Amino acid sequence: LTYEDEPIISAFHSMSSGTTESAENAWGAPVAYLIPVDSGYDTSAPKYFEESSYQKDILREKLTAAFPQANLGEDASGWIKVTSVSESGTVLAADVGGITVSGADIRTALALRSASFEVKYAGDNIIFATKGYGHGVGMSQYGANSMAAAGSSWQDILTHYYPGCSIDEV
Image (cartoon, rainbow, N blue to C red; front, top):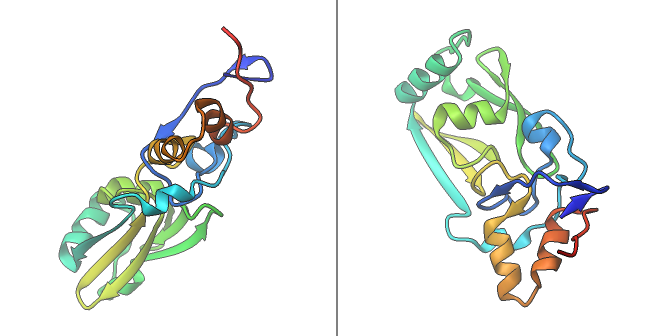
């Protein structure tokens, strides 16, 4: 598999939020063939949608450990405010106690399944509703398997997830 006669650096993840993510949004540098593509099969995957709930005190502890500069007041509903989301649904930026962090940083700090999440508040519980699993870049393992089960060839799957690439004859 090549892109403009250069071997590709592939990326795999378990399942996207329904559309894969760009390398630029996930890792900060664009890669021509690692761009968003439809991966709708992922939305029917087991555990596609998951919720993780944190009690206020536990969330404060985790956020303070990950972001010591954050100023977390008494009202937990103001602790995390999503400020930017990609077209694929990945949280690109959020305000955490007055500092800007990435969705990937929050994902790591809270051990979330993905950086495609929404924050909900229920009393002293803060709920993170995630979609997909992993960084979301490149070929979705679940989506590729579902495409194959539906009759797509391996060539069709590769060219779907890595647009603009060509398959070299061996």
